[in-house]
Structures are given as structure tokens and as C-alpha cells.
Image (tube, rainbow, N blue to C red):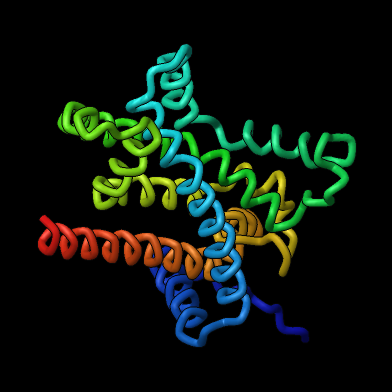
Length: 246
């Protein structure tokens, strides 16, 4: 007489606890998959934020103190692009980098470089819009003083960017949060290729759909901890700078 195997169905709370227990076990043992995905995520998002700082901060400052035709239109455009759908940006970058696109010869599609490119297009308008507001407030206070010192337009931009550097941490953190939480664009241009272009957000989406919840939760915990740690560090550095320099 053969015995019938009966599957064991865990109660909801037991399944919840078991999933989180396995997730924290992955973190405690420094699982190679988790480490590799986290490092790639930090590389891609860090590169996008660096590009955002190089282009977004000066652009926002120029919009704040510049006086040129189309200034208000460009300001409205920057504010509108702050909430640009990531999938739309991903499709545009895909068309640019595809074989038939203008940048297809460089072979960047489905590489981390393509992901950095897509995330940069998302964070630059956000950082520029926040910077414009910060520098505009400072320009109202120091405009006459800078004019009396005969500062050129570009000298005024660089001076105010340096003077407001502690307040601009908010713009950098906003860009970092947008980059690290992005899914749609990097999924389209990166392809979510294992051990090549798979970052935390795309892995969470994939593993959740596959039912591998422990890995998804482990990466989610890392993502939240990284963002909170960076925000805490930036807040502490800003507080220290304000106490030291006033």
C-alpha cells in the first residue's frame, strides 16, 4: 500500500516569518548574489547622480539668475520633467541606443552605461529644478552685492553654488532617491541580464514575480538601509558644516 505525500501548507504568519528569516539569513551570510547586485546598483545610481551634479546643478543655477529668451519656458519644462514617466525615458533611450538609432554604433544597449544614461536623464531635471529654487532665493539676497563687486554672470553662478552647497545636498539626495528607486527605464535599456545589468529594483520585481520572496525582501532591506544611511550621513554632514561655517 503506497503512502500519499501530503504537502504542508504553512499558516500565513508562519510563511511571513519564514520568508523574512530566510531573507535576513541571505544578508547575514553575505550572499554573493546580493552583494553583486548591490554593488552594481550603487555604481549605476552613483554614476547617474554624479552626472546630475555636473549638469543639473549649473543648469538650475543658470535658470535662477540668468536673463535670456525662453528662460521661463525652460523652467516650466524642467519642472514638468521632474515627474517624467521612467518607462517613456527608457523607450527614448532605447531608440537612441538601438542598432538603428543615432548612437547604435557604440553598442551601449543592455550595458550598465545605458542604465546610467537613462537614470541621468531622470535625475538632471529633478536636481536642476530644486537647485533653481535654492539659488533663486539666494540671488534675491545677494544680487546687489554681487553686482557691486562686478561679478560676471558665470562668476555669480559659481559663487552662489558654492555658497549654497549645504542646501543643495537636498537636490543631490532627491536625485539619488530617484535613481536608486527607478525600475522602468533601467529594465528597458538594461534588459535585467543576470550578472550584467541586474540591479536591486529590477531584481526585486523579477524575483517577486517568480515567487522568490526571500531574495526580493533581502534586496529591499538593503535598498532602504542604503538610502536611509546616505540621508543620515548627508544630514549629519550638513549639520556639522552649518555649525562650523554658519
